[in-house]
Length: 310
Image 1 (tube, rainbow, N blue to C red):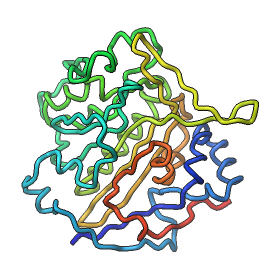
Image 2: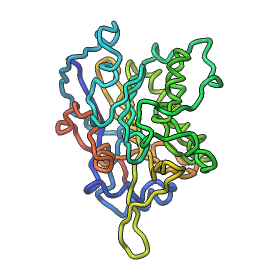
Image 3: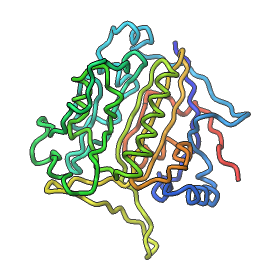
C-alpha cells in the first residue's frame, strides 16, 4: 500500500485564466493579484504550515513490480491511467495520443527512473533524424516539409535527453508525431529546455517520475472584449502551432508522491523568470486540454492550500 502526497491547489473557473497567463513575470503577478480564484497553484515546495492529505493508493503495479521489471514497459509508463484513448502510438519508452486534425500529439507520457535514464556511452544525438510517423495516414501526419522555412523548431514533447539509455530509444523520440511547432530562441532552446532539465533533476531525486506533456490552444481576449481561440498553422499539412504547452510531473519516492504542473506560452520567455512562476493547478490544464491526467489519483481527498499572497 503506497502513501500518496500531492500538493495541489484550487482551480480556475472552467479552465479560464491560463489563457492570458504566463507571458511575463509582471503580468503573471497582476493576473494573480486581481483574481481571487487564481491565487492557487501547484508548487515545488509547499508553503510553511500547509497541510497535505495522506491516502492509500492501491494498484496492480507495485513498486516492487517496477523495480523487478515484472510488468510491461507500457504498464509502467501508463500506471496512473490513460488521459484518452484516441489514436494511441506506443513506443518502446513513451506513449502518445495523436491529434489527426491538428497534426500534433494530444499528450505524450513518459516514465523515468535514474537507472532507466543512465546514458549509454555510444549515444550520439547527431545520428538521430527527424522522420515522419509512417503509422499515421498520410492525410494526417506532419512532415519535415511542414517545418521547413516556418520559423518554428520541431520541438520534442518526450525529450530526447530523457531516453539516452540506447541509441534506438533516442532515435524514436525524433518521430514527428512526438514533435510540435515551438518558438526556437527563448522557448524550445531556452525556457522549455530548462524545464526539461528540471524534470531530469527530479528523476535523480526520486525513485520514479511520470511525465505527461502536450499542447494547449487557449483563448485570448481581443479588442471587442470577446474571447477567441486563434493559432497559426504551418506547411502543406497545416500543422497547428499551439499557443501554450503543458508538462505535468508526478514524482514518487519511497511510496510518497508529489505533483507539479506547468503551463508555458509558446513565445520567447524571460529567462530570468523562475520556473515556479509557470506552475498552475493541474485541473486547469485538464479543463483546457479536455482530458484527465493521472486520473487514478483520487484528488477529492487532496488538501487544497493557497500559494500566492500579495
